[in-house]
Structures are given as C-alpha cells and as structure tokens.
Length: 429
Ligand code: GLC
Image 1 (tube, rainbow, N blue to C red):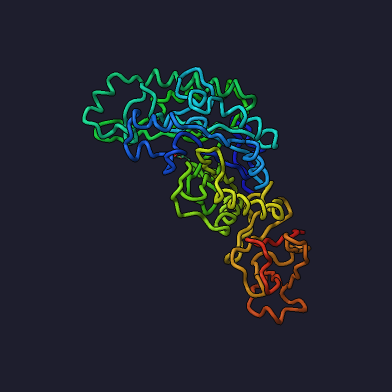
Image 2 (cartoon, protein in one colour):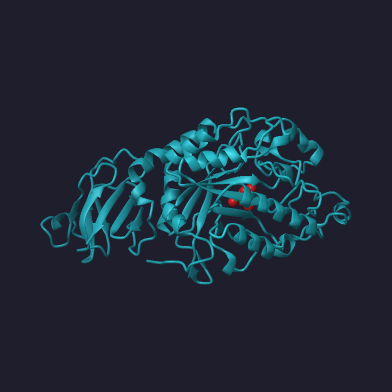
C-alpha cells in the first residue's frame, strides 16, 4: 500500500482519523452571503463596520458544536481564528479588531478550544494570510479597494513588512496561549496574480520562511498545510479545495498526505440563501472517495450570527452521524486499496479488511475482478449479516456465466439495506 514519506509535522494521528470539521465563523456570518462578501461587493471598512458593531452571537455554545462534530464521527476541528476580513475571534493584543470589542464582549476561541478538546477532538487553527482590514496590507487583486483609482497611491503608505511582523505576533499568541495545537491552516498565496498593476502575494510578502520557522519552534509536532507558497520540504499536508481527487494526490510523482476540504452548500461562511446543499449520498460518497484515495475529508460548517448551527447544517451532520455509527471502521485507519473496485463501487482498506462501498445498489450480484480465492468471509457492515461468496467453478457457478477466472461474486439481497451507502466488509485471507 502507498505510504507518503515522513515530514516535519506529526501526521500519524491525522491519516488514521480521516474526518474533521472545518468551521468558518466571523463577522461575515451577519451579512450571511459568503465569507468573501467584503471583497466581492467591494465594501470599505466604514461600511463593513456595521457587522462588527452588531456581532453578538448570544446563543454561542461550542459544547453543542463539539457534540455535533463528535457524533458525526469527526475527530478533529479547524476553526478560522481570523479569516480574510481580518477580524479575530480571540483576545489578541495586536489589534482592536477582535471579538472582545464587539457586543458579545469576549474571547470566543478559548471556550471553543476547551469544548472540542473535552469532546475528544484534536484542535487546529485556520489563520488567514490575507487581511482586508489591516492598514499595512497592500491592496491587491482580492482587496475590497482594488478598483479605486488611487489604489497604487494608497499602497505607498502600506508596509507589508509591518504586516508580516503582525502575523508572526498573532501566530505566537495562537501557538502559545491555547495549549497544544494540532494543525495550522495558513490561507493563502497567489504570487503571480497581478491586477491593474497591483502585484499578488506569496512567500516574500508573508515572510513565509520566518513564519514556518516560528510555527515549528512553538509547536514542534504541528501539521502545516501547503498554502504558504513554500517548497515541498516544509509542507505536511496538501489541501484540494471543493474538489475530489480520483486517486492518491501526488507531488513530484510522490504520494503525499492530503485532505480535501468541502462545504455543505458551496459557501464556507454562513449563507442564508444558498440553495446547493449536497444530498446525503453526496455527503457520504465524498468521505468514502477521500479515504478510498488515501486522503482525509475536512467538512465545513458556517455557524450563524447567533452562534448556532442552522437546521440544514445539523441535518447534514446527522447524515454523517447515522452512517458513521455503523460504518466508521470502514473509515478510521483505512486508506486506498491496491484492488480495483467494480463499477459503481469504491474500496477502502485497513490491513486484511477490505471495505466495498456500494454507491449504486445492483440486482443480486456483484463481481469483483482479482479477488477470487482471496476472501475468507463477507458481511454487510450495517448489520453483520453474512453475504454469500460465489467462486468461479463452485457449486453456484451456473448463476455467474460471464465472469473471469480471477473474479469473485458476491450475492447481495435484492432490497438495498436502509443506509445511505451500504458497505460489505471482506475479510481477506
Ligand atoms: C479559500 C477561500 C476561503 C476558504 C478556504 C477554505 O481559499 O479564500 O474563503 O476559507 O479557501 O479552503
């Protein structure tokens, strides 16, 4: 089985746990129309201030969020401590632009960290490299002021060196003030993206080498993602976004540790009117696809401005909870199998347990090439009911006239088991 080379961070727990929760929460929850609203609608600081002045998530109870994540089978969480809007959820000493200065009047990060740890999840911090509020952040292709005639002129007084130092001080706070942090998720770099003469940003702007050095010094085991615009030797995990790779992600031809990040509905931040919520089948299939291709899934929730997970998010989490209750051993500790699955199916594998995830329920028989003679026992995972194995040339071979010599045939019930994606557990010899 494929195994990526070790990196500086400790990914041993990560490749076992496989399933995490992403949380995008900030002032944009009040606009309720995407976390990029400030950029998309070119809203200046003065106009955006309304969200700061009214940010009062009075129903915020991270214990309930953590319980929902745990019940869904998620083993770790990554929270936006600061997103592109620049607003900080914690009581940072580097800026006034933070939760304690809004009507809610307190550090929102600390209770979050405590709640998730107590629920048994590992905790990671997302930290935006982009900052549309900091006065020293030069205007660029994504900045809300990008279309102002005097953008280049305004940039004269913006000093990216000061901003890079500001980031280091914030990261120092995050990595020293909240106990062990398992993941840091920096987001993101775009060095080549010039817009109307305004350059993009990358490692030289963020001073990424210094940032990563500080990160590793403060939290040696921490997992660092790939968005700092640094060479591969600094990177622990790769992060395909709103995209499902078909097979193990490779960099320079070598398999790497990777995590797909996905949304329930297209937007990361709370989006009231978003209509493209994924179906239960899609939700489970994305998890299976990730693990079956040797990766993780980081599934996002965007809590509301009241501090709640709305009913659609809770329903989606419930889909995972129900399925994982019966099928988690086809996820945890599993990876891409060396066997090729039959049509409409995916494999995950953990040692000599091979899991056949059936995306489209067939009529009575499933033929699997390359497995003849290799399976000792088969059962449906949801109820441990035996599944008959028909070998070529065996007593039931009259029902399987057209299968190859090396194929094995499973005889499944006509009615699909009442689970979103049925799984057959194959015990390999
Ligand atoms: C992005 C987006 C963003 C989101 C993130 C998650 O690059 O800018 O809003 O936080 O990716 O992957």
